[in-house]
Amino acid sequence: MPPSLKDAPASPNPPFPLTPDLAIIGGGIVGLWCARYAADLGLSTVLIEKGGIGQGASGGFLGALMPHQPIAWSPVKAFQLDALLSLETEIAQLQNQTGMSCGYLRCGRLIPTRTEKKRKQRETWQAAAIENWPARTAAGLALEWRLLEATPDPTWLLPGAAPLGCEFDTLSARLHPRKTIAALRRSLQQQVYLRENSLVERFEDGGRSLILDDGTRLSPGHVIVTAGHRSFDLLRPLSVRRLGRGVKGQAALLQPACQIDPSSPIIYFGGVYVIAHDSGRIAVGSTSESDFSSPDSTDHKLDDLISRATELCPALEGSRMVERWAAVRPNAIGRHPMIGRLPEAPHVIACTGGYKISFGIAHKMAGAALRLVGGSTPELPAGFTLEAHYACAD
Ligand SMILES: Cc1cc2nc3c(=O)[nH]c(=O)nc-3n(C[C@H](O)[C@H](O)[C@H](O)COP(=O)(O)OP(=O)(O)OC[C@H]3O[C@@H](n4cnc5c(N)ncnc54)[C@H](O)[C@@H]3O)c2cc1C
Image (cartoon, rainbow, N blue to C red; front, side, top):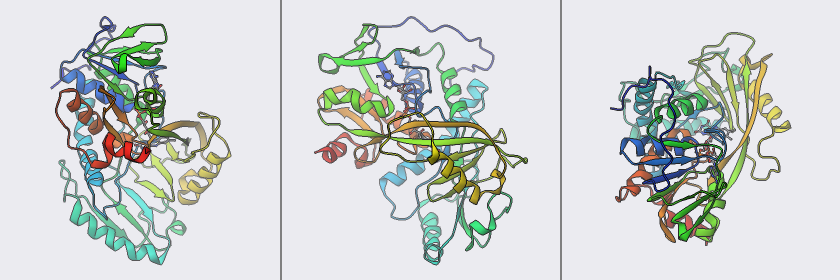
């Protein structure tokens, strides 16, 4: 069990080693979980971040942790299920160690039923949840895919938005991304050297050396690339093929005019998410844009999204805009997360491509990457391996 940091004063980083056991490139959710587990293993670790920690795609405010549909069960779905279940314990430990809240709650998810076709299908999903999900979480909460004849709270999900009732899954949860990043960062103090405002420009010596933008050369024992959507450009000179792309998303944080229940379930319909947070604010997401010229600006697409969200959730009527936000998600070429050693540079480990579900699975991605650092082979769905992604790139 790591020591408690609740009362520890903020302390300076330890000296910056040029030949650490491990260098992690990128201080987003994936890089921070990698750093936490590396510290647990006692590895001398540097984490290099080109801006500030958590200023990439992980710096938002949505934090939906939603399972895949339980039908057509697969190793990918099993990996995500295990991640969503184990995250609760990981977050509890992190909060306990740091004394900081991550805004985590297993709040469930409401999906309005709009068509007869979906109404028939939802029984299949319910049966699949019984078959493929455990009956309860470790904390004893029943895991179910319930079928409701009407919205459970008309002030949260509008009855007119769910004319044929709705589905409610009790597995979905939410956390607050910025709070989680802050807690992870705090948990690393004195254990990992965090080098912010420092860009890894390139690899040299077949991946054995990293060159930073101030000319510093590092020769780590292993490198884990968790640079989000920029991982693909960074890896390209080593991998020859481009292994993924960035997909922009826009989101909004709103202060409702009336008080809401912060434990309300996530509403999800047609790519629109509505998430209540502990602050009483409501997060609305997200667009998915493959073609974009401005990666971090918001536009009319976000306004459209908020309109669609307000048609679902009356609590958004008359709300005040707190923040508009956009960032670029990492989408690996095989569409699944990408975790593995580069065949051309075996001590370079790619750990990216969490796309829309990174917050729910990042700790498990990191655990797999650290097993590779330790010389063992993690159990991963075949689609996550470098071989699978390379096959898609051919
Ligand atoms: C609008 C929106 C809504 C979302 N909603 C959800 C959600 O509800 N639930 C969910 O699970 N996920 C969600 N996501 C997706 C999730 O945020 C991302 O998948 C996740 O943040 C990716 O984390 P990462 O650590 O891989 O990348 P990032 O968070 O992007 O971190 C990569 C870091 O690497 C740094 N970096 C890049 N290049 C270099 C370099 N050369 N040298 C040094 N540092 C470098 C960057 O500055 C960055 O900080 C959402 C994303 C968006 C945009």
